[in-house]
Amino acid sequence: MANIATKTLNDGAKIPALGFGTGGAHFGKSADAAASLAIKAGFTHLDTAQAYQNEDSLGISIAEAGPSIRPKLFICTKLTLLPPGKSVREAFLESLKKLQIDYVDMFLIHSPMFVVGRMKEVWEEIESFQKEGLAKTIGVSNFRVGDLEELLKTAKVIPAVNQIEYHPYTAKSAQPILEFNKKHGIATESYGGLTSIVKQPGGPVDPVVAKIRQRLISTTGKQDITDAQVLLKWLEAKDLIILTTTSKWERLQEYLAAASLPPLTSEEVQAIDDAGSQVHFRRYQIMKHMDAPYVANAPAPKL
Image (cartoon, rainbow, N blue to C red; front, side, top):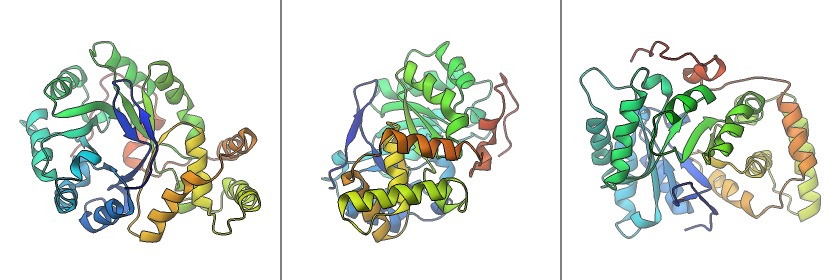
């Protein structure tokens, strides 16, 4: 396995700071080939979700890796919007079956919009999974400050993680969430961190990243440093847990190699922040509530 740094969560669990996600381009598709490649490359943190519709294919990769590998893996899945009559426990146990494992290392509420009017009862159920050892760590995803405040009014367990879309073009709007997370000991996990170069190229962040890349090349003598690695170092400087995804071996190696590069200077981090603040772009429109003011018991989306 690759030597990936870990972060200690508020419940004492250690989470690999760099993970492989089966969302994005893998959404609704078989992810076993890509996940097996990621495991082979050395990724141990594997992220999926009920909504991605590919837990079963990740389960194939986990099974093929063998029982000796399972204790080295950190597997996360997330609760989706449940159809009428289906319980949280039923959905959770289905996930375990699909993943071919008897516990997950982390279980998240995928979105507050999936538990509108039920947040207290749903979180209590998820807390019970942790007590039973079925989910070692529990947390949330795509929660705004208002959503977190609502949850913390009744929660017995503070979420260990809040996973959000975080890249230069969402950083400004997400700053209050990062500050709230830090205040309450909740780790922030970034997905979509390479959006500015993958899905929104040509923006004000590009020349700043290119300049930093040239500085790193000059400093290290490594000619193969990439823009993606610069952004990974920016996310690292923010003390975030980072999720990436790809189906290409060379990209997996590129992402893992970023850890060995020198850190960005505080001025370089600020330069990316400043450039990113000029544009607001959210790649995942299904999470557009993140840009809306918090409203208690807002209507839930339709399946």
